[in-house]
Length: 424
Image 1 (cartoon, rainbow, N blue to C red):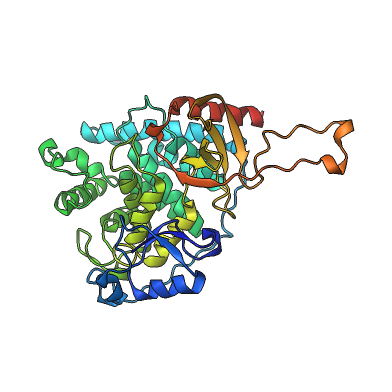
Image 2 (cartoon, rainbow, N blue to C red; image 1 turned 135 degrees about the vertical axis):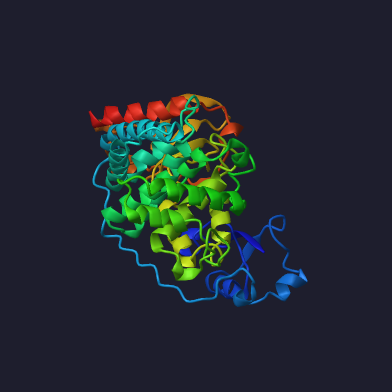
């Protein structure tokens, strides 16, 4: 059964997403504790009159659910704080992004051409990305998510996956050393592809379910990395097990539970999220709420339950760069997260309520409300009775970019320009 809406605000419940599947009686009990009634989507799930729901099995009876004991996830939210403003960080993040893209292309070309691989500049570029994300995650995530339409980089997906993983690890409070191991692991996870015959890679190598080809890629990646003295052994170890899954359905060794190292678990969640989000192509992602639902459905089976929940907490339902519809019927893009109230981010309005693209983009902090129509006070209008209150604006849902007349490159560049001008 698919729960599409509650009788109260999602923020007042422990449920981490707006829309999820109920798979067993324990989840029904949780719903009863927090809600008097809910709305279900009978297209996405079964109707409540179905006998299969009435005879719902307990969680442990499901064949794909991992039944063993697991170490609890400890989150330390005191390790990292946002220490730079978005206007100040965006320029530095842009430099880090450009450098990492360039160094990634260089290293991949060296591997493909079987020339001497020089990793040091690449490693430093990864570290610069990590430093930017730890100072202010929104800056680098904006560059990753709002991509220029003329940018045709074949290894862009690696930067994107590494960014998801780094922001997630930052949320968990992992050490800077572990952030570096994790990011390097994700960035280097596919170099085995470069040494394999194209005919092999054409057989749906990008399909996560094709574990046969995936296992060959992992083995070839490990072989290649062991030849490079600059690669830390922990990076090799993390890559070797990041495609394992909690219930033993992964590869290459079908490891289960805590036999999978923690960093490999973290990398697995981040890369899975990226794969399902961008399954249709680099410039055609599915709405983030749908990819979150797919990740949430995999909890307890492919991924550790509390690790999935923490990933969702790290990004919210609408990560930075998500195109959303507002209660004003306008279309906006999330520019900055509110880490206390996830459904109240700062957004940039790009399409008006009539469906026309705006020439001049407008910003709204949903926590404060819409201040665009508020007239600045003058000496004759300072009286208390004339005080103006920002109108409330809510975030309704995420939407597909191709459904609206927006120019992604213009949005990306103008936001960067506005932030840099604000910093100056």
